[in-house]
Length: 140
Image (cartoon, rainbow, N blue to C red):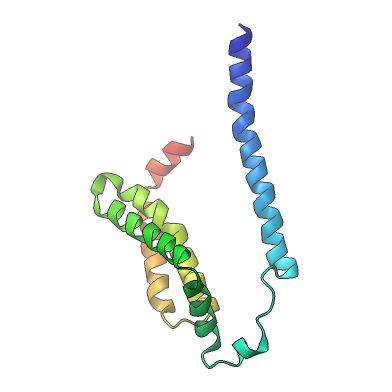
């Protein structure tokens, strides 16, 4: 009897603890970025480069090969999942945050392919909308 109660408490408290911890961590980091500017201001020699946003963004992203590979893996995995009908919804779920991020980078750093990234994001959103009943059933 005591094991059943303990298990039920753990089953309820662990996910709640994880959610609260993640939410508070994201809130702190998000507010640090919004209020104080966590990343700082680039030095003048970087901002004097022609094509400021594009050059800065590409220089930053190109600084870490591992980061580039991880982002690329996310895109490839999402694409493969989208190609398989049974995993297409999961593919759209995986792709959506990537698409949002790409769209934001393109607009915020004036990358020049804002139209394409916007279309891709809305296409993914449309796929998620079409599968909304499946997705709502998961969270119920």
